[in-house]
Length: 95
Image 1: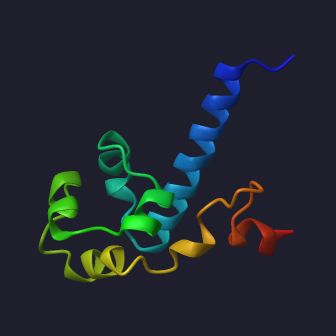
Image 2: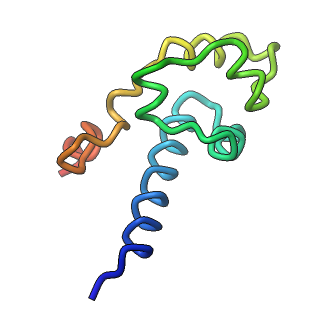
């Protein structure tokens, strides 16, 4: 039997893993926890984008101009955002 709290935990863990994969591809894996602690997720970033202030809030240094630009442009994020059916484009490609 599956309880709701374990299902929620599984979904959160999967979302965090997808977030980590995306940031790793951008060479920004060291900022994953800052984004998670601040409440960001991939779907929100895809829909709303990120600002300079958002990046300051999660601790991405202003000296990391290339990373900041990629984050604000949502570089390749579509492949990591889970669709309503449960898979992102990147997961479908792996099958």
